[in-house]
Picture (cartoon, rainbow, N blue to C red):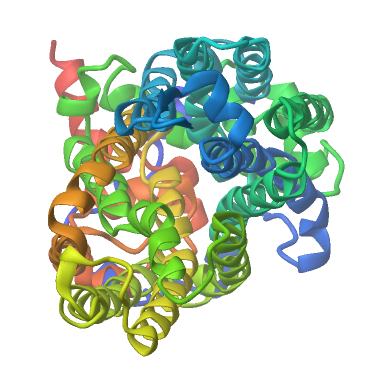
Length: 549
């Protein structure tokens, strides 16, 4: 079922830079429907949606680790074992706290770049199961720690390697498996599971803090074994990515995967059409270039600009300031009488989790660009108000006396914090994962996503490690830095991010090959299914060059 070169050459070349594609063409309806297509009804998408939920559970593994470590550093037994005795009290220094929390991000960056290639060699399912093996090793290293703080750091770095793989492969796998009308929604479900993991991590540490021994932190760590088993079990049920199978010339397996995901039979003509579309896209990619790392710079169409866009979006997701709020929110809440930092975490976790449901709804209804633009504008306003209130009006006697606070101002800042988290969770939190998962061709998708995601982890490390030092030096003026980043993010999205809502992964390549302006991309209409199945498109010029060599 692999299309021959003669079949590919028989098509009409897709015009490049053709402005007429910005409007509906006048081709007869019967020509548009010449190829049978899969049933696009919601009923037929139930199976593939369930399969994508199994993949998205990887986000829960990521989130649970994030939610529990914030509780560990405040637990008496944890501080006694891994902290320092100062003035008859065990405490964790800023350096130890920063390293324990932030070394995880370094592991994630390394795992995402270097270990996610397992998915290209052995498949997406095997890649995720391999990540859980590493995850279990990291948990064992941590849970067996007695009193060496650096053993916790080593264990968290190993766990980070696993989560780095998960953060690349889960959105990638969902993006390759989900139908185009639900792809954005299902990718954002990955973010929903992250927030659910964070919330339940908070709840778990809140429940175990009543113990007076190592059960405070060893029970939450022990639960991580269950999450790893659940994800591996889900991968055993999940069909492999059809795009990966076709790239490896496993056509019959790809047909079975497509049929299973769409609740039909492998001999359905529409399944063959889907195979044709994917195969044609892969053939165009092969002509356009190989899968080496240099393709991230020299690849066509516009691979370098897409890689830069992914790096910028993942970096800006961290620079919106969400981790700053989760770290410093405890201090704000204490100013109005909430002394229990565990209760503080649960409040923020509830808002974060609940708001993600709105993100699931809006990402496919209003598109990626509108979500990010709206989020940037609203979070900018929140940060300006928050920073002005904190730096001018929170402390009655200035920063010399942090105990005398203005309670109405503190209440206002709590409200603004929750409002900010609402806007972040419903826009940028899942929107960035969605865009990055659907912006790259198959041959370099895992490489490009790993580089982009590594940028997210790098900034996560810097913010997690240096925030305690920065906030102790400039306090709430730190918020103006994030406000500036949010203002920049608004203009960056407007001028550089193209709309990919409702497009197949192969049509995204055509969008870039025709050099459609980002602010006009929402109205772009892709070529017909017949063109996409048989035309060489953007690869035609490259093919001609190769034939003359």
